[in-house]
Image (cartoon, rainbow, N blue to C red; front, side):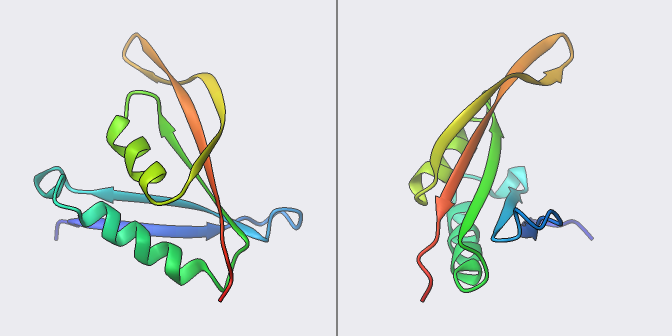
Length: 104
Protein backbone atom coordinates (compact mmCIF):
# COMPACT_ATOMS: atom_id res chain seq x y z
CA UNK A 1 0.00 0.00 0.00
CA UNK A 2 1.34 3.44 -0.95
CA UNK A 3 0.48 6.37 1.28
CA UNK A 4 -0.70 9.25 -0.86
CA UNK A 5 -0.48 11.81 1.95
CA UNK A 6 -0.29 12.12 5.71
CA UNK A 7 -0.09 14.70 8.46
CA UNK A 8 0.72 14.44 12.16
CA UNK A 9 0.95 16.46 15.35
CA UNK A 10 3.26 15.10 18.04
CA UNK A 11 3.17 16.36 21.61
CA UNK A 12 6.65 16.65 23.07
CA UNK A 13 7.56 14.68 26.21
CA UNK A 14 9.33 17.60 27.87
CA UNK A 15 6.98 18.99 30.56
CA UNK A 16 7.98 22.55 29.59
CA UNK A 17 6.88 21.96 25.98
CA UNK A 18 3.66 19.98 26.45
CA UNK A 19 1.51 22.99 25.50
CA UNK A 20 2.60 22.61 21.88
CA UNK A 21 3.21 20.04 19.17
CA UNK A 22 5.51 19.49 16.25
CA UNK A 23 3.60 19.07 13.01
CA UNK A 24 4.59 17.46 9.77
CA UNK A 25 3.00 16.42 6.51
CA UNK A 26 3.81 14.83 3.18
CA UNK A 27 1.99 14.52 -0.11
CA UNK A 28 3.06 11.93 -2.68
CA UNK A 29 4.74 13.61 -5.66
CA UNK A 30 1.94 12.51 -8.06
CA UNK A 31 -0.61 14.48 -6.02
CA UNK A 32 1.24 17.71 -5.31
CA UNK A 33 0.07 21.15 -6.49
CA UNK A 34 -3.59 20.10 -6.21
CA UNK A 35 -4.37 21.76 -2.86
CA UNK A 36 -4.20 18.50 -0.90
CA UNK A 37 -1.36 19.66 1.35
CA UNK A 38 -3.23 22.81 2.31
CA UNK A 39 -6.42 20.87 3.04
CA UNK A 40 -4.72 18.30 5.26
CA UNK A 41 -2.68 20.94 7.08
CA UNK A 42 -5.78 23.09 7.70
CA UNK A 43 -7.63 20.03 9.01
CA UNK A 44 -4.70 19.14 11.25
CA UNK A 45 -4.66 22.71 12.63
CA UNK A 46 -8.40 22.50 13.33
CA UNK A 47 -7.98 19.20 15.18
CA UNK A 48 -5.19 20.69 17.30
CA UNK A 49 -7.07 23.83 18.39
CA UNK A 50 -8.47 22.42 21.63
CA UNK A 51 -5.39 20.34 22.42
CA UNK A 52 -2.46 22.73 22.01
CA UNK A 53 -1.64 26.41 22.39
CA UNK A 54 1.05 26.46 19.68
CA UNK A 55 2.29 24.37 16.76
CA UNK A 56 5.86 24.20 15.48
CA UNK A 57 7.07 23.09 12.05
CA UNK A 58 10.31 23.06 10.12
CA UNK A 59 11.43 23.06 6.53
CA UNK A 60 14.63 22.87 4.56
CA UNK A 61 15.59 26.15 2.92
CA UNK A 62 15.35 24.51 -0.51
CA UNK A 63 11.75 23.34 0.03
CA UNK A 64 9.97 26.48 -1.13
CA UNK A 65 6.62 24.70 -1.59
CA UNK A 66 6.55 23.67 2.07
CA UNK A 67 7.49 27.17 3.19
CA UNK A 68 4.69 28.68 1.07
CA UNK A 69 2.23 26.15 2.49
CA UNK A 70 3.16 26.92 6.09
CA UNK A 71 2.99 30.68 5.53
CA UNK A 72 -0.35 30.38 3.71
CA UNK A 73 -1.87 28.57 6.71
CA UNK A 74 -0.80 31.22 9.20
CA UNK A 75 2.57 29.94 10.38
CA UNK A 76 5.30 32.52 10.98
CA UNK A 77 9.08 32.12 10.75
CA UNK A 78 10.92 32.29 14.06
CA UNK A 79 14.40 31.10 13.22
CA UNK A 80 16.98 29.67 10.87
CA UNK A 81 19.54 26.96 11.64
CA UNK A 82 22.54 27.23 9.31
CA UNK A 83 23.54 24.03 7.49
CA UNK A 84 20.85 22.00 9.25
CA UNK A 85 20.54 19.47 6.40
CA UNK A 86 23.17 17.89 4.18
CA UNK A 87 22.25 16.33 0.85
CA UNK A 88 25.26 14.94 -0.95
CA UNK A 89 27.82 17.71 -0.71
CA UNK A 90 25.29 20.52 -0.35
CA UNK A 91 24.05 22.04 2.88
CA UNK A 92 20.65 23.61 3.41
CA UNK A 93 19.48 25.79 6.25
CA UNK A 94 16.61 24.70 8.45
CA UNK A 95 13.76 27.20 8.67
CA UNK A 96 11.53 27.02 11.74
CA UNK A 97 7.91 28.10 11.94
CA UNK A 98 5.26 28.49 14.62
CA UNK A 99 1.51 29.05 14.74
CA UNK A 100 -0.32 30.18 17.87
CA UNK A 101 -3.74 28.59 18.11
CA UNK A 102 -6.96 30.25 19.14
CA UNK A 103 -8.85 27.71 21.22
CA UNK A 104 -12.54 27.33 20.45
